[in-house]
Image (cartoon, rainbow, N blue to C red; front, side):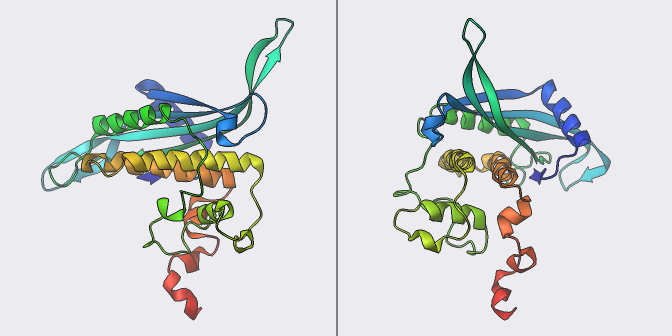
Length: 260
């Protein structure tokens, strides 16, 4: 999976061109109230687009079972848009006024399929993305019940506690059983709070579909990378900082911190 944490204009233009050719798009419209955004007439939309990204390699890509100078990867675009329904003109026509919008991309590398090794191709990634967006359409609750959902629902115990500090802090702040003074950092603004609630729900839906078929792993990772980027962009930090924290030279080797 390739991340796009920094998106220069030339890259965005190229990605945009790729997505306009053979893209499949699905948009889920969520009421603001269901995600904890209390502004009257508020709506949130989550748009997922996927398209084949055809590449020509500089040198021949050779394995024990194939040789090729081309590659068809999967390009995934995810956008979360916040809007408020307003009236306009003497006819009181309703329209959505966009308040904020965050768009990110991830690319899934897809070598030629090989049994028991490279299991995914573009059609299989597309199929899983369509399953995922269908599950989002059927979702009715976009605010987590923190009495039932905790950190281990998103981060396994085996992952060192120094990793994913922003996600851990957000969940800790909303755990009813925890003393709020144990959480570090200031409480998120209402704008960030509903945004992160939506991202957590998107991750939760992905988890519910994941692990059922090995050929879906590439698609699962592609969607997950986009979701992590959404959080990082909204937090105005790099993806590396979102995963490892600010002291990345220490967080990459957390077992060494006691000696530093």
